[in-house]
Image (cartoon, rainbow, N blue to C red; front, side, top):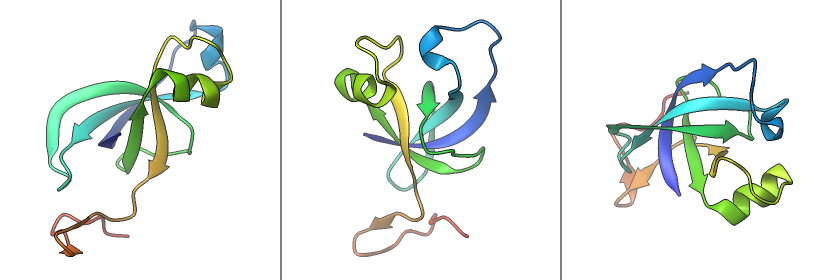
Length: 99
């Protein structure tokens, strides 16, 4: 599982049938302290995340297949949660998410 920052929504008029009615998002992978790494990935949003939100990204084929309801999905990354805060070393991180 990874922490990521949603950077963009992807719109495609022609796409694999698995993605009909689903939102694809560009997510920048972050370190546990929420520092962006510059590494980006494409993920299926399952929680209605928005641009600028920190999210939990799961990258695992069997889980993606179960969530999407297909045997072999063409993408393994799923946004499965929106992060409210990150706590490191028993205290709130200076980069905690403001609400």
